[in-house]
Image (cartoon, rainbow, N blue to C red; front, side, top):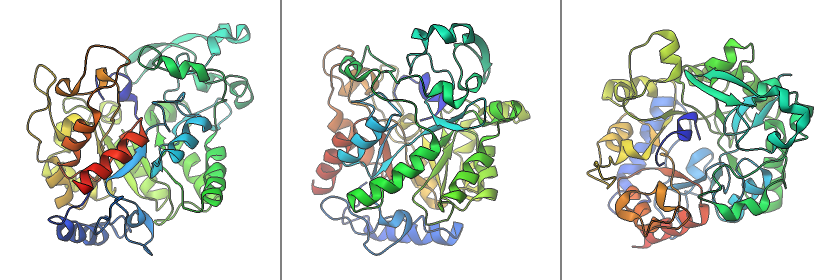
Length: 395
């Protein structure tokens, strides 16, 4: 997920009473955007979408999105993580967060700074690459993908990003290399053939304004690869996302894929707004006016879960906002982020004990969020999400 995810504290299935409204919403999305980003109709036991329909209509609702793969169990943004997410039942895999190399290739890393997600610090030959940069206004020290060629990055191996919360994941440190976006597109086709069902991916453009200033524009590179692989159409199983609205607007002119604007905390400003002198905050974007504007160039939003249900000063869930209703009213779907099983990432009233790596009552938290009517959710633990969806639908 996006850059804001690095600093955030935390990160519907249809029932009988909502099927009609959701069917109407699907029609509204079709009418508003001309895309097939409609919503699933009547939910079956496992939340299946309507058979024989293309695009997102074919996906279960709420959609379970494997956040950076199955990052609750494997180092994120590796083929090991991506494939496990599919094994665990994810409907879509977030493969991946896209950042460029010095020679212009797109690779999948949570951030361009790779000190925390690879073994680069162990490579003495790259010791002199360690530097400090200002990344979207934040002074950041480490190693950056844009200072490496693809061949150099391929000598590195992925490691667990948050070992204090996921000590068991460190078992897999060093097993997988950094995937390129083109490798992901090929992998997607291979997995689709192997599994006998369409595999979906949900890549994100990371820090697009920052990289455009470096002469490494992301959107054109993404569009070129999607076109090369025949995946730049409205029915293509690739959803594109970004925290910068201008990146989504740029993509809207280059490809026909479904597009999603990611939204961080209400009091924050997208970095492209900061650079352009646009005073608006996320709070402005989630007003009716702001959502109508987004609906003019995107099909969905990916809000932080706190924009769906805020927390009080103690970290407990409070009353849901009107965001779901307001977004649906203008034809936008909602895929909020990020559900994780460990205590520190859950609302306080769903934690069990104090262990940083202990699981809380994540099923209860899923139930609370699903009840708001969200259309899907990013989760590090796809298997938990799939079971929570079954509970919600069958309950």
